[in-house]
Length: 320
Image 1 (cartoon, rainbow, N blue to C red):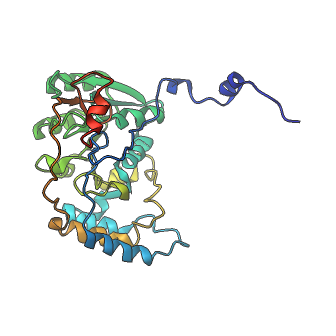
Image 2 (cartoon, rainbow, N blue to C red):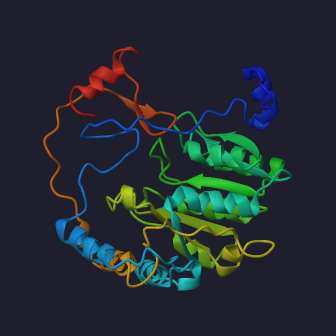
Image 3 (spheres, rainbow, N blue to C red):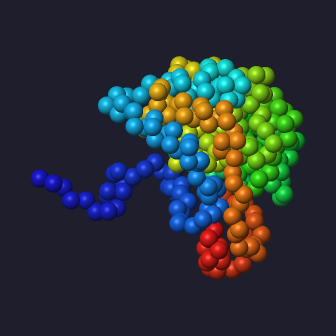
């Protein structure tokens, strides 16, 4: 006979971990507007001929078969694009899943991960959900990082994972190359350098991976490449990181659309990365000027001027 329980009894019996009681679900409103600053998506779709190539590849998918878990064609194409070895490339469903896999492999209840706030909210979110102890270090008032203070925080806390974000989301500030190297020198464990916006800052620091075995550079196709809907993120690291500290790093693989397995979409992405002009953005459309000051928000660039209640309307009217 079914047993009836009150809502409070249900929450007590089947509730989530107490340490997650104050953690809100990550999310950003998906509004039907031309410019989405909260998710920083490109307003321009990929080129038509690229989409036609992708359509032809999708038409030949063997959806009755599981895809190759190592997706060699895509990794080989990305390795050629980056200029590194295939064994240093790993791919997943967007850069967030790369970060999640790394925290699953190198974090845990007896370990610590450090961020420098304000920064990308998913770094702390994934850390806390994984059960890893979260340590929040601070940035300067102008959102730059104070190297001496950062090294002091690292030395004091000895975190197993350090998150760096350059250019930083949501502030746009870039960490100098020499500061990244100094933090790698001081780090007692893994350093994750999130470069989701590297194409907008003049280049990537992935070559530091050659000097630091514990450095992972995380990249994405969601921003400059205009492919947020494809969910393709990758990391560059020495092979020892991909194998994890106690055996294989947790691998779930790229999603069931088969973007990983030749002759699937891997060759299509490979052609795209070998023809950067193919994805060059057109001239920006004429947008209405919006008199707002932009600052740090919890999930992206956030307008800071105007009354709280009026702010969303102010932005939605011109299509932002």
